[in-house]
Figure 1 (tube, helix red, strand yellow):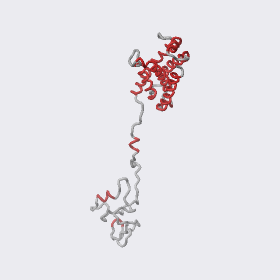
Figure 2 (spheres, rainbow, N blue to C red):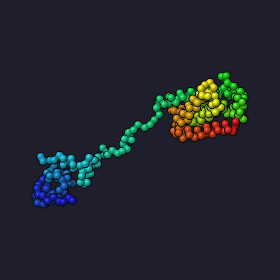
Figure 3 (cartoon, rainbow, N blue to C red):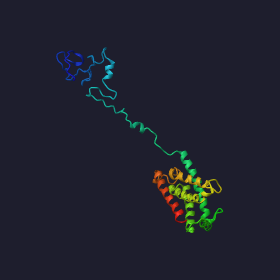
Figure 4 (tube, rainbow, N blue to C red):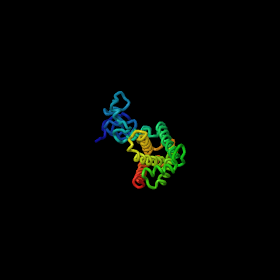
Length: 257
């Protein structure tokens, strides 16, 4: 416990006949500063600024945060606040889409979407050497499907619309799910022919992988979907659309066949 200093002397404004300074400042004998700015001494009783100053005691008077060790005279330094563990996190660069990923996704969308636009034009309009609705209906009947006319239209429109939406980057999860459902049905029909082309499922597996990837990555920033809710949450949107594609594929194979 700090006690009153009863030493006499005239140092720093003290009188020679009492324990209290003439200016009324209250002095303690623990070697730290008092409330009077010019009436403090070091740990050896020497006034600050004379030849007997101890630099160690001077540094010990205040800790590194700007407070003296007595707790009586806090010094607030707003210019240099104490760092916290949040500082490192705040300085990190936030995650953002990269130009390379956007370019890669754009090319992937063009390749997959463009291929299915061509397939849709063949089935719906008979263009580019395609069978048209009538020819595709006969193919589905030969494969054992009921309601072949309806399935021919649904398949052709799904390929045409899904491919076009992928090219535009609009409703991308839904478009990718539609393409994935169509390709899954084709793989189910052709898997007995082996893996490698022309009779195998090599091309269809590549299409399915591309559609599955776009289902969860999203279209990238070079798309009309940019900023929409499914663009900001591609995992959730992709999972929901994957369930939709799985349900449509199951219904086609086990209900209409």
